Length: 75
Image 1: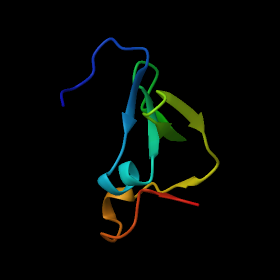
Image 2 (image 1 turned 180 degrees about the horizontal axis):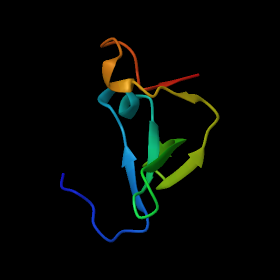
Image 3 (image 1 turned 60 degrees about the vertical axis):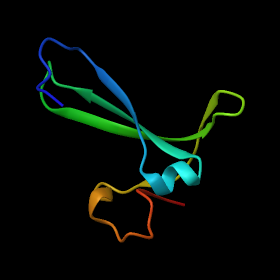
C-alpha cells in the first residue's frame, strides 16, 4: 500500500477471514484531497449471485485489535 496522491475518493471492499465466512464485509471510503476523512459501510456479499446488500450493523473502529473469535463488525 502506498500514499495516495491526487485522488478525490478511494473505495475498497475490506473483509477479515471471519467476516468472509459470515458473508460480511465493509466498504471503506477515504477522501484525502480535502483533509483526512474516511467512513465505512457494512454490507453482505453473496458471491453465488454476485450481489451486495447494505446491512445495519455496528462497525468496530478498532477491528484489527479484536479477539481472534470476533469479526470486525457487530450485530
